[in-house]
Image (cartoon, rainbow, N blue to C red; front, side):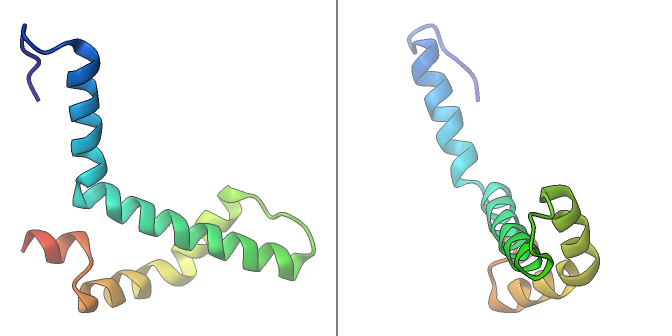
Length: 84
């Protein structure tokens, strides 16, 4: 997004920020992050201690990401479905 001489920098940055927040890719990132955090909580409860975000992330990717993405695409909420 181009900044114009008429538009103050803060206003231009706010517009860019809003554009990013409304993007499909950003929404997919937030949805995936939420699932990872849920997985972290569940696995931490099972372990009786915080397993940490990195371990939860890797475990979720290996065990759940593929099925999660397929489900979202079937429901029409995936980034790929939105751009098709």
